[in-house]
Image (tube, rainbow, N blue to C red; front, side, top):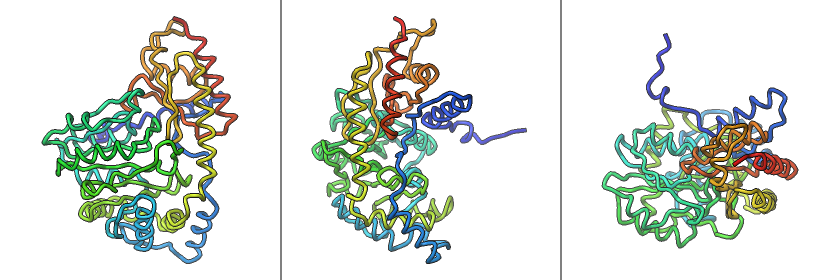
Length: 399
């Protein structure tokens, strides 16, 4: 008799993974599917980082390491926070984990009790909701719109806070829409949070390096009034094209870092030793070393936005960060194909996959129905062909 725990029964796969799985299944039948559903750079890890990992193997960094990470690597991360973000951390405030996803779960486990409120602006990364639910939190979603730049306001946050509110979590640059909170935006949010000393900010900055200059990246932990209430999460997957290395890290008040270390010691122990040595090379490098990737993404962004604005029923603005476009497609809802009505963004996303052979992710996955996420982390020719297919598929819809 199979008897899974209630936790296992309640936990589903993220829709990003589900859509990628459906695309692979369709590809396995011989269909030429273009996948724009996963958030993974199409570049290889830079050589200087791979060389540091090779050297680490030669030097036999192949044994157990401290659970929060090698001290010298944590010192390098602390130096990166000071250099790039204006945040002062010591090595004892840094915890290195097996990807930023584990970093986030460690924080939720360290801070959230069942019944605590977790405030999540939408659109949000899919795992925020699942991890908060896993910890028994009451999730309060704050919706945004394209007109608001997909950002919450200080007034919106203030009205959502109750005595039960424990965590505010958001990403900037944002996945799935590429929104970036300005210094002024963050100052207003910090002023609100500072009035509620039992409320903590989880600032997910994994897309920090993928910023195209319209809005400068600012870390909310750099505001002194919320420094002791903020946990900054970052990693190497996006900016350094290191998704497979599985390195994430946090900077946090020391008592939170220690709690995260306790959970990590019981779940996974320290992050991969060789990957940590590669992390040291990455965070110590000048950000200009990955400019070629940023420049390429910026070029693709301009192309994708221009192409998609030509598709009837698609509304979008140019996103200032990350590597996604997030068009509103509500004008397509209610249209039909072969008598089947497209009622939701999920329906549209499935239609684009099955009829257009383009894999995307509906906004429903990110808490904002009526939108669809397209990744432009793919070759230009592939992106152009994908948009052509989408345009044809949309043209084939009937009123």
